[in-house]
Amino acid sequence: MLKKLCVIAVMFLSFMVLAGYWGTGVICADEKKEAPDSKSEETKAPERPVDPHVGYYRFYFQDEKMDYVFGSLILGATVNHGCEIGEAFYTASKIKDGDDASWQAEWIKTARLVEARGEKSLAGGHFVSARDQLQRASYYYHTALVSMPSDDPRFKETALKSRALLKKAGKLLSPQLEYIEIPFEGTVLPGYFRKAAPGKKPAKTLIFIGGAETYAEDHFFYIAPQTFDRGYNYLSVEIPGQGLLPLEGKFFRPDMAAPIKAIVDYALRRPDVDPQRLAIYGYSSGGGFAPMAAEKDDRIKAVIMNNAVMDAGAGVSKMDVAKVTPDVTRTWSSFKVRLNEGIAWRFGLEKNDLPGLVAANRALRFDPAKIAMPALILVASGEYQSPEIKRQNDLCFKLLPNARKRMVITPVEEGASNHCIMENRSLMSQELFDWLDEVFQ
Image 1: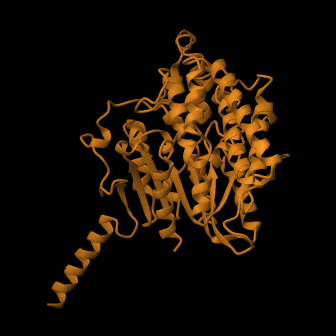
Image 2: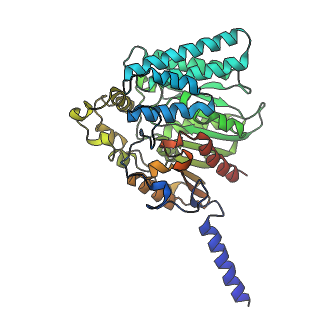
């Protein structure tokens, strides 16, 4: 009898582990306890190559790249005070579809209007109104940068304007949003920190690492408010390759763990950071940078990837830039050209050397088997249709050694299919923080 009970107990425990009751498992955000296969609803759309700058449904523009940026990056930021629907659609109505110069001009025009409203409220002592307007103005200036070449005389000026307005708005938050600069290799890494609550009590902390064309400012509008709401310290800092750092010769490089180590060093010097509850979250290319740091730094207690970029070179080799020729780029919209040229610049390449991105990304890889801490992988269902993205995320999940791991594939039915789940940040944050709260209990 005792032997039979032992057998039953072993079978029950095995079932619990396989079913994911201790935080392990591949699930869909709609509670299905399995990854979608080729016949599931989440993967009915035609198979697509790796391309982070496309949407899986139409928002407004005919130009695929412009439409993705408008719907995912801009409209997606509405929940985080980076956008108003009326302002966004009015601005869009004035933009020539696919035209980079028109995009820049109209977003700067809107940014100036919203900035003027914010400054008027600030002068009148209406601090909530001022905070909200200045935040949106900051993000609209940032939006103009998406298609602005780095050698445009307005480029640095526009980026610094976006930064200045977020710094000003941040002082109207309580606790305030702190602008910080972390010394690194003869320069500084700029970013923001906001403590979870007043005082110096150690709190849970999320370090956010952005992707290939991001700035500390758009990091804020991606996830900072959700971080505040859940009682976490928020910390996000630009690393070489991001923001204005390429203007100083600081490009993306093989050792992306080094600047992230400097960020972790900074975090752990603060008395308001709990060293036992320090998590790092990387999205887009940051889904490779963050785990590259985590596999070398056990001070990081949890890592989140959106999605897991195990081998950036392999992924880029499946993009259309890998073998593109001038004859092909001449058929592209000016917006698409500028978008891709900007990424090449951030890797230290000539702006028209798009195939060079394959070699430039080859060393950007990590070994999931060396990541000892709990890990979460988030994958938008649209991106999961790509065989290469599916391969890398499935393999990463399989190799992660910690039992407290999870992979979540967010569903298209909830508007959560685009790159980094940009267009449903509430769902993205729910999955992330609910899991992280369980890990940090």
